[in-house]
Amino acid sequence: MTSGLHVEPLGRELADVAAVLRRSTVEVRTRGTGVGSGIVWDTTGTIVTNAHVARADHATVVLSDGRELAGVVTARDPRRDLALITVDVAGTPLPAAIVGHPTDLRTGDLVLALGNPLGITGALAMGIVHVVERRRGAPRWIRADIRLAPGNSGGPLADVRGRVIGVNTLIANGLGVAVPATTVLRFLADASHSRRGTGYRAA
Amino acid sequence: MAGPTTTTPAGGVLESLSNDLAGAVERAGQSVVAIHARRRIPASGIHWRPGTIVAAHHTIQRDEEITISLADGSSVAATLAGRDPTTDLAVLKVDEAKVPIASFADASGVRVGALVLALGRPGAAITASMGVVSAVGGEWRTWHGGTIDRFVRLDISIYDGFSGGPLIDAGGRVLGLNTSGLSRGAALSIPIATVNRVVDQLLASGRVSRGYLGLGMQAVRLPAALVERLSLPNDIGLMIVSAEPGGPGDSAGVLIGDILTAIGTTPVADPSELLALLGGDQVGKTIEAKLIRAGEPKSVTITIGERPPQARGSRRGR
Image 1 (cartoon, rainbow over the protein chains, first blue to last red):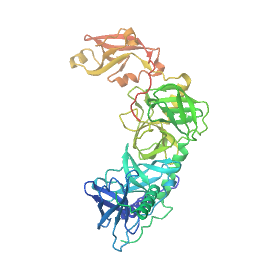
Image 2: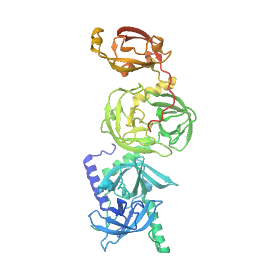
Image 3: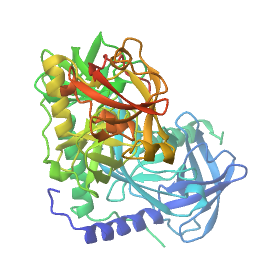
């Protein structure tokens, strides 16, 4: 190893970044689809998850401290497999995730996933970027060599500093596949535009 | 809980490890190529020596019209210099490859617990998976009779493009060539020394020559009375179950049903022990096969032939 690494600070830093991520990861429960994961995107009640996790119009969002909030699915995009759940925070800001830059990702970078695989709450997984599939230079899918399971869907894929770079969406040929955070930002912009302009409703 | 979350500080060991790994992939990835010689997904190869690409034999499913995509995005035509199914290696030649050759690590870097990356190029982009060396052993013999200098098993996930790609350390140096074709699904790495030996032979003669008897055999337990009466070295022999017509064994008069107990004075109780006696340097030499036929000892002199070349790679493995 070129940087003279020591295992002890490595473990401590991993625990720190896991704690950071866990605060901004929620459990998403909807009738019929079971338990998925979600990301606290801002302090005012915007939760991002997969469209295949938020199939109904309403969802229960469970914060990492155990609080349960009633959520309304305010936007769904099945093509990008993204959904937006809005919760009423009753004046208490939520612990929002910090969004990273998937454009800078390189094959081999360490990545972390947090979620509720197979119903285990707040589970951490570590792996590396297998490949970032791009279209005209922009990230389209992040494929990661990481062990995910059903229930990770909708949860964060993050860099080593805990910045969210993607939404874990599916498992293909053993690889974790995440929708890049850049796509989430476009989805949120589209959703907010639709609501302002045309009286957008939950799909 | 309240307020936006902060990230962990920059410059930690986790971040430098991440940068080291990505840097290793970037450097070593320069010499990893994509090989278009099968349907569906391209396989990986390593620019091993100038103009010489090494790949996994089982991924090269045609002998002609092979093209190679390099890390710089260019494509070149390649010719098959030879293949050795016994070690699952194939060697390709290209006129010019404007990408660097691999840089190699010392064999001592292959230790149990070593943090390693497996690289592949099943298309335009480099891919990587991370794991550790899970077991290291001595020289071993593959199903098909090839000799691999060291047994190197990996705890790493196998994805498309894994076979033919390099195993690298965190400094980006190559430790071996990975393949899933030598074991049922497990990830193995072929050491550099073995690859070099096979490359030398394939470049020199287009093949790795191996001795051949043209006999199929199976281990059988012999009755104690027979072992005692014939003073046999052990109670297991190799029963001949097939004989290639006109092959070395058939020509020497070996019959189906004969039981082979020794070659000269060396007892053989397992087909792998026999394979060990049939190296390429033995071709053309004669051996004294000690047989039991109808309960009586019999000795037959066989001239060792050369194993006929094997055809294209199978579909097995990734």
